[in-house]
Image (cartoon, rainbow, N blue to C red; front, side, top):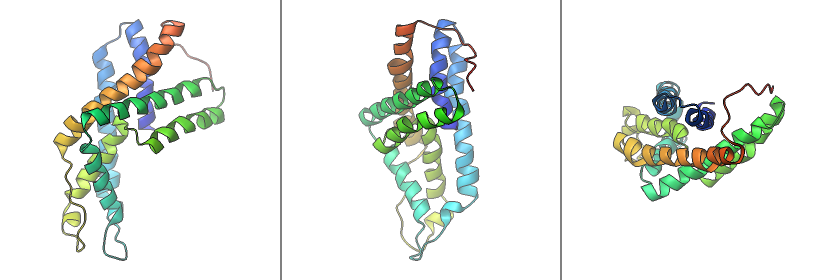
Length: 203
């Protein structure tokens, strides 16, 4: 649910431009609140709960190792790879939101958002807010004593805070902004003109 709020902020960007709202407030909504809301479940529900430390028959911890591998891979992506993946992701996610706005009932809205969301996940595109959970989770698990002292050798953590914030989060967030703002929101504004926020009255 947190992930789907991000494109909503891209849609509000149109109103922020048209109505001269505070860009700082928009930035805080996009980054600071989403970061706090994403890291908390990664630490509290993912790490402290211990659900990722389940041991298989061979003595390994496959869930924890997968989370570590995922964090390593995402933090190792170069800018020229992470940025377009961010563009493609939020392009599809914002299209999903626009499609749902054209539906008049809850079931139709739920059905319409699935194809674009499924497409960006299947294609391996990058969503900054989703990765605010995935990457910290891998870092928490990979640095834990349980993981480091496991009896079976597992993938070592190479991701760190610098890789998360600088190498990954910046290019992906920029890509998400371009994908949602330029390729979706501004395109619709060019076609229909800037519109003030209004209650659509849909269910």
